[in-house]
Image (cartoon, rainbow, N blue to C red; front, side, top):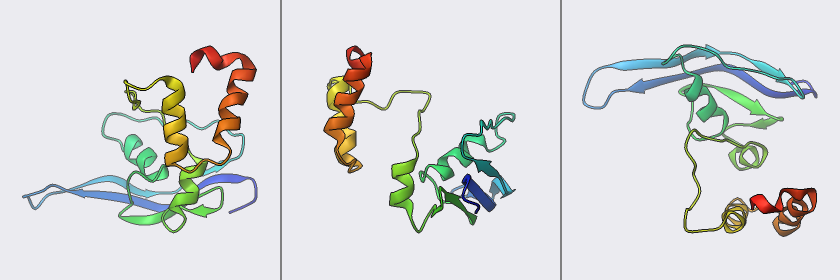
Length: 134
């Protein structure tokens, strides 16, 4: 991995086994990508092409069947905790606790993922005039 590469995959594959059947589905097959810092990168493809599977692997939500990836130099599996501190994922549906305020949701997830100095980071959001969104 070069110093300006932020995401790099090496032979990433994911095969799903359908429970109760002798059927296997290949969602990813030997994916090799290299994304540089600051680069805009899109993942396009039809339904079932493996886009979501790739994103789930790169965000540590799913482990590959084979291959590996480096996120900012950290091994996706061996350094999963460090990778989780580097990546963020916004799903189609919200993942917030509706009984908590936006501020309390931020505080909860910051504590959960052991974000250092989270209170200052939340205060900084208020300073840049997005406080009304929390």
